[in-house]
Length: 80
Image 1 (cartoon, helix red, strand yellow):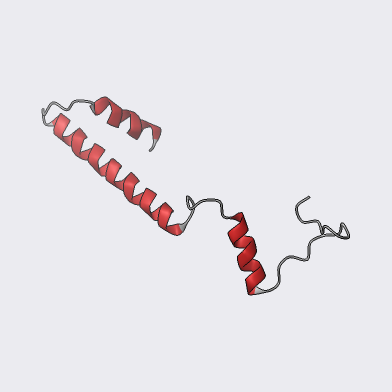
Image 2 (tube, rainbow, N blue to C red):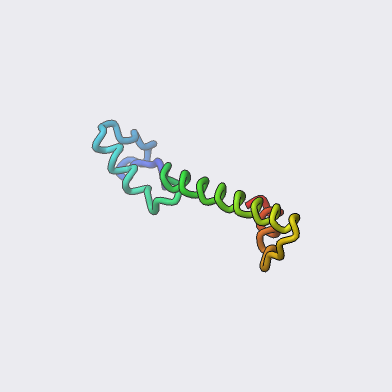
């Protein structure tokens, strides 16, 4: 019954004050996975992994034996 007033059954009039909006925002935040900081950290991690895979690929092309390189190739093929 989201968006329905509990007393009269009509549509919710939404929170109008800054305090009311803050309460709704806090009530609907269940974790921090989608915060700007978390997204930035994931982008940095993804960039690090991609750079590391590129370095390993260049080393392997140069004749340096790399163990577990297949896992890196698997990750890069998935787009991760």
